[in-house]
Structures are given as C-alpha cells and as structure tokens.
Amino acid sequence: MRPLVGITGRRLQASVIGHMDSRYAERDIDFFFTDYASKVAAAGGIPILLPYEAGCEDTVERIDALVITGGQDVHPAMWGGSVEDTSVPADSSRSSGFALDPDRDVYESVLLRAAIERSIPVLGICRGHQLLNAARGGTLIPDLPPTAVEHYPSDSAPTDGRPEHTVTFEPGSLAHSLYGPTRIVNSWHHQAVDRCGDGLIVTGSASDGVVEAIEIPGHPVLGVQWHPEWQVTPDPAFHWLVATAQHRLPVASA
Image: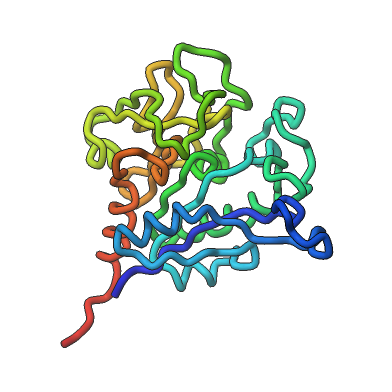
C-alpha cells in the first residue's frame, strides 16, 4: 500500500482570487500549494489535503505521515511573544494571506501533537518548522536582524528554486543522514527558532547561527526552515517521510 500523507493548508477569503465572482467574495476557501502534493506523490505517497475541520486526533488515526506546511507567522500568543514585534496584521482576518491566523495555529498544533504521540512521521516546513517548536513550548525570534546571510531576499521568491545559503548539519542526526554535512538551500523567512521546545534539538544551522533544522532524537520528526518543495535539486525530505511511513504499514499477506 502507498502511505497516506496528510498536508495542512491555510484558509482565506475568496476575494483574494483575481476575477472571482464578487458574489463569492466573502466565502472562505481552503488553499494548498500543489508543490507539496506533487512532491509527496513523486516520493510514492498519496497526498491528503487536510482542511481546518480535520484538525482532530481522529484524523491522525487515518493517515500515515504529516506535512505541516509554510505560510504566515505563528501567532505570538503561542510562544510568549508580542504582537507588536510581528510584521503582519495582528488579527485573524482571512482577507489577506499574510494575516496571523490563530485558527490555523490550533488546527495544525492538534495534528502535530497527535502525530508525535503516535510516532507518525512528521515534516515541518518553514512555518511548520517554527510551529513544531512553538507547539512543544519553544520560542521564536520575531524578526531576524540583518546578517551576512539573506534569509528573506527581496529580489526573489523560493519558487524560483534559487539556492541562497549553506546549512551545516550535526553528525549523527537525522538531518545529517539525509543531507550530509552541508546543503545549499533556498530561504524565505523573517522569523526563526530561538529556544528549542521540549525534546527538540538543533541539528542544522546557517553560518550566522540561525536554526535551520530541528528534530526529536529517536522519533520520526524533522523540521526544516527552507522550502524543500521548491528546491532546484530533489530534496530527500519527502522521500524520507514517505519511506518512513511505508515501513510502518502492515505487510499484506499473500
């Protein structure tokens, strides 16, 4: 059997879509970048798009792996920060894709905690990497100061796949087993992991010390700050996720 891989998304108002019939403007839509599903399918999994209503423990009983995707900032209330320190609107309005969305924080956190409890493989990407840390009681850097590494380039987006900087991985870690000692990655974030949450350790860092990979030793959990779905060269994270989920499936009898 091919493993079922749950993929989280965001919820917006239909008015964000150009040329949308104005009669639908106030209705909500669920939004998922197709790149996540494409990479999961290419790795051998069956992508399952999870709306907010799927944010319950029962969902995790029916999936074999979980991807927590990128997006807007995690609300500071989750990690003890201040709304004034964020660079996005301090409300949960879905009229903008950049607004803070506490509803998304809650639904993804429920899925994340349930998956970790059940040893379901988890891949947290960018925002998902930060949410993993916050959901485990960790903190975030609200806005990275300028350094020699450009973490949020103004002249490109991660979708063009342009590699931005090098990440160095800790020997013996899951990340090191996937990427080797170093990897050149893309970058599209202004926040970062600060103090690690319960059980999490830093296993990848940029040259300026910004945390780029976290994991829970002995558990199939990996958070990466870059966007593996948009890397120029294939990123092994999706193959790791699907292969790990596959190994947990019962072997079919002849």
